[in-house]
Image 1 (cartoon, rainbow, N blue to C red):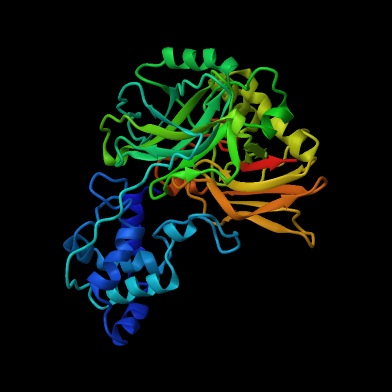
Image 2: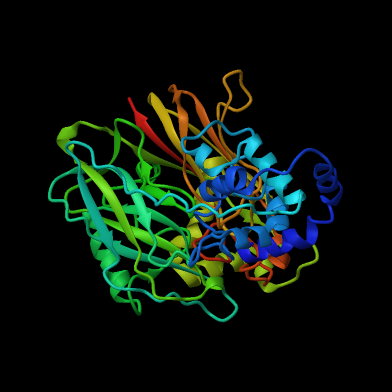
Length: 478
């Protein structure tokens, strides 16, 4: 659900539910000081998104603006919906979590202040300006703006545009990316960004997609739409994928784990995939990626991206009737839209994860296990689904005495995707098992914004009417 509608839904549904707790809070103690207690929290934890021209539906920059929204702030904070932090309580600690979440004291301060009338006793505070990554000794700064501005657009009734842009870092020698910062040109419409590397062998295909599309870049959803690099088999492409980093509003510059870097071969390019939210307009955007890169001589450990896809087999709801509710018809539709190869992916995932593609059984829950074959250290975890996603979990050695949760997102929201760097990297031994578990909800087709409502049997695919179940780990090996 988009941000503006989230706030509206909260106001309608949650204010009555917390009326009694709010009343109880209002009866106790003195109200926190706005200037001393409330304004610093708003500046540090809210105003990064809630600023003029930002992605949030309204700014929280002045005392008047904040006071006018005090009850809504209290509702969202007490319901733990804002600030958004998708990982649930079973997840481990992640680097930067303290900058994106509220402490118990901060939460109590905002709720108590709101319950006591949201009064102000002075000015608001300005949030700290985002900082670019620090350039360390031996590194160079790589500034990669889009070549030209792009005005996002979408068909009538669609509120999102997913666009890929080819960027040239002009690195003559083999290098390692050590940090990434995304600077949105139009913060009010840039909702999230994912950066992918493009090998020299993939560049002609990327240029073809770009030149065959009207305007800068090309339309993309889920991935870049590029084929795997030359000489890449299935296992190779899953164990060393092209993902570099992800960004969403409110997240700061991302320095990769200490002593590591994403390898970038000489002559490689990058693809910046931008998700535009058109509910906030369609102003021309010229976003940029700002990187730091170290030469291969720095001897950094290669940070590899390991993909863990799971099969997606979502039948229509019992009450739904349509031609595409038939699985074979849905497969034919995949081939029509994306080529014959797309129709083989569902069978390939069933073989990969279940050992057999015969008689596929529809299920709202999908799992897939991958066995670790070499000593591996897990540094970063992420999940990816589309608009029918409900929950995603990544685990190491589930069901054993050595079980570890790597990431648990109990309420998936496609519009708040990011990657999470573990405070304590997790060591995995040969023979260990990593599992991805995804849960989907076809009922979202009737209620959520941006989801095509036409009933269909949903399979793995790149489009908005298709789905994915994907675990993503960034690891070092050996």
